[in-house]
Length: 81
Image (cartoon, rainbow, N blue to C red):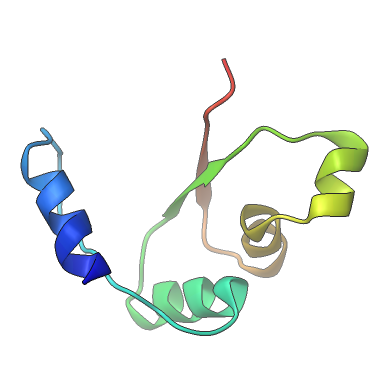
């Protein structure tokens, strides 16, 4: 079970605030936005691979899709150093 595995991984982390692991099925952009709106989330935190320019356009991005389709503030975290 993915939810159980993710919850177990978070057990050992020193996190601030409420955390919730939830699996959603469907179009990722639509599901993330729908869930955040339904739960009245103050903001959404999403990861990004730091793609730029043509690579980003050609490969697409769930994060970019969410950013462009919601008014909820988005915090992005990149794995690029």
